[in-house]
Image (cartoon, rainbow, N blue to C red; front, side):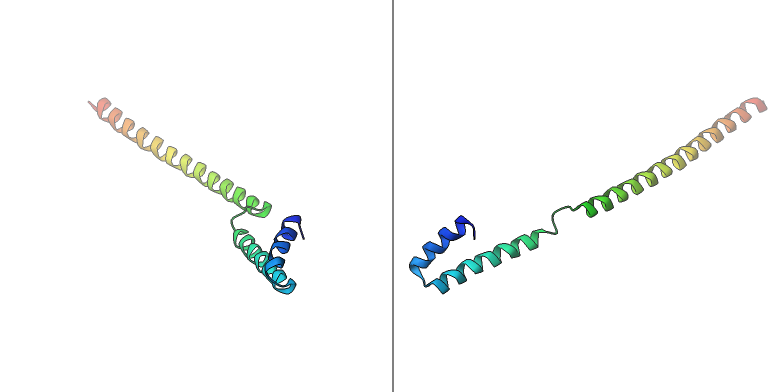
Length: 92
């Protein structure tokens, strides 16, 4: 027991019996443990971080791939429009 728990135990012991005071302390410890267990899902572990980094890298590479595909499509469309204008211009 920590010093805080001992102090709380002594205060409760003055009002209750030893057994009841120990039960109350045990109850508060179990409630604190439940709160910690509920919040464990919020914390980021090393494995979670590795998974997150790999997902970000995957998304990054997919984005870059689609950007190049888009740029090539835009370049082809622009070249086609320029070719069409030049062919009309030189036809006359």
